[in-house]
Image (tube, rainbow, N blue to C red; front, top):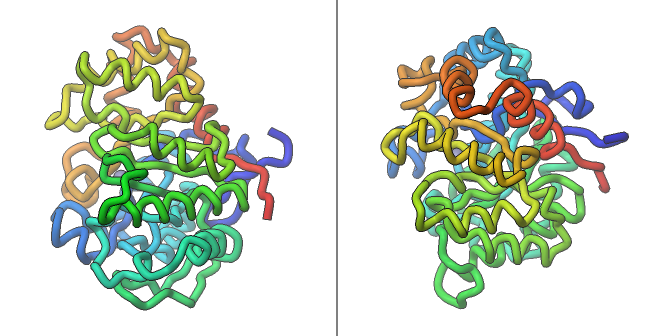
Length: 332
Ligand SMILES: [Zn+2]
């Protein structure tokens, strides 16, 4: 992995220095449209987030990917402050979320594909914008911290259909793919209920993004016989699989999750698995939530052992696979 870097909010690091990393969490989300729609989507307190990270660091956690993208609640300045105070590496996201989380007059509707590409590239190369609003005003003021990954999301439908918001998603995915190609940075993609991966992979790879620079999130949200063939087909495409439906019992049990991870390993995908919790304020201890950022280290790890997943595999999911998935040769 010579010359490759991982870009954290405090600067770039060698992939060998990443350490234990959960690759899809939310450490901060600013109050706004997201929290109006889903009350658990607000975490604005620097001290509380630092407490959570210090606790995580005490258990062996060394790095976290914050999956909240620019313009819909990302708190770039606080991410930098929290990383400095806790000594946990934080990889921040540019890119975009589901359109549900944007006001109808948001600039992402107005900017064309080339402008969006440049916007994402700027955040990765020059620094994240800190004067972000969920509205028409395109941000112009940059902080010192740079984004290290491009977050993308769709609503699960086929973005090649020429309908309403699908056209907007198509534009956004094309822009994200072009920004990844231009900078070398990895792309992380939210799959709505685990679905719709094929068209998203097609559009990203059409822009020159290699499968091993793509992380698909939430493929494990629904685990049943009906989904299995699709899930294994997606796994076979060479992308990283961010499995984060852990401790989310409204979707399925942790036993079902462990069994699914064991199946993926049995099929030979152990070098592609990443894990995390996709946290909200209902899941972070310092915000009064139920499980805490240390849940995987303290609880889920033991359950994995019962399914034949020992320390070697766990080390892959949390250290060596993240260091490969998040690292890149900076092109620009
Ligand atoms: Zn998320």
